[in-house]
Length: 115
Image 1: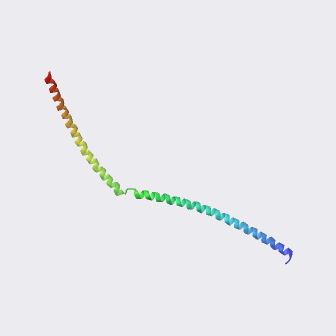
Image 2: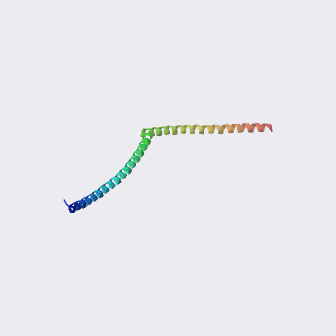
Image 3: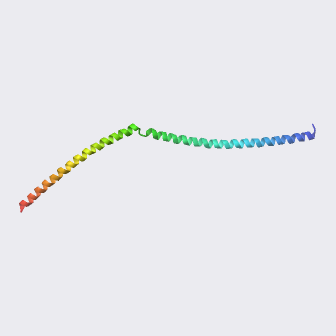
């Protein structure tokens, strides 16, 4: 092997090595970019999992349809009870009005007796 052949072989090896270095750089930069993207996606997935967990916790504590129906029934009962209270209060108001009339007549009678 002569010097010219070694020179040609070195040139070819240099070109192959340069192409290999470019290929390695291209692949490694793509891999770093992919790693960053995967990290960002994993962070987003973790955030969404946390949000879903919070929503599930809220839904677990939310009243069921049976609970709401029970509340509606209780409110209806209370409404009926309030109707009874209103009726009694109206009766009491009429009694108080009659008592005020009686007391007023007694006062008038007592005042007129002095004269």
